[in-house]
Amino acid sequence: MPSVSEEHDRLVAGFAALAIAIHILEAAFPSPLPGVKPGLANVVTVVVLMRYGWPTAAWVAGLRVLVGSLLVGTFLSPTFVMSAAGAAAALIVLAAARLCAGRHLGALGYSVAAALGHMAAQIAVARYVFIPHPAILALAPFLLTAALVFGIVSGVIAATVLVNLDRPTSQAAR
Amino acid sequence: MTVVRPADVAVVVLAALLVGAAWAALWSGGGEGETVRITAPGAQPIELTLAADRSVSVAGALGPSVLEVRGGRVRFVESPCTGRYCIHAGWLSRGGQVAACLPNGVVAEVIGSGQQFDAISF
Image 1 (spheres, each protein chain N blue to C red):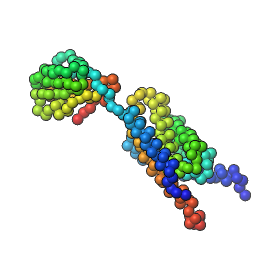
Image 2: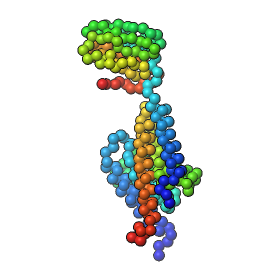
Image 3: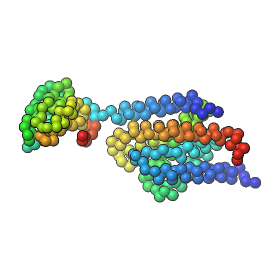
Image 4: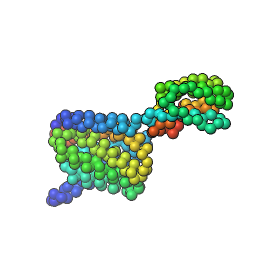
């Protein structure tokens, strides 16, 4: 009989593995602008947040960034720092959103808030750490627009996943 | 459980407003032009303020190009080139905007507090 914490570890590992797979698939896609990615791994973060709470989501997102960077080969590189800063900011935004409007918010709201927090932190890190030049901010509107669009897309996907997870038929099919 | 809740819509609207504000704040262009720098072959560049209306004729490689400053803007009025791209560039008023008559070697560049672009090619 596995203990509650073992059960939880398995849950985290399973969702993290799913997020890492999506993360790596996305890393293989070419991007029209540096820094623009669909961020579909955040679907997993939002789904886990809404079903199992913030600490579990933080574990899944943290493991995804760490293991994803190890597998893609960007660990401790600027890409990794950007990724970690974005994930940390997204988790902070998600925690704040949950505290402020927890039960009123659905997957769409969480996903959009997290996407914008993620992108804002990455722009700040790029501006102040890697390319300390004000001109970087001229890219911000493009990047934030992309974040908004992809945040809505992932939000709709996450909402759909949650609805299907809650459907009794899928429970029976398991 | 409904898929999209009212609070979600509020978050999306708020996010869209924030993104709009980012566009307005960070992508507003080069700012008002203050002077125009006119470069011609074999001469020092001249810089004219956009505050005073005037016409100026600049000697180029093919002949004189006429530029007009009026109401804080500047344009090519006449140029002895064939394409007339410089004239079709129209009025320039924002910092960083450039009109060039390449055959004649005459370039007009608006200088402002914030330069929108280093250069623009057509």
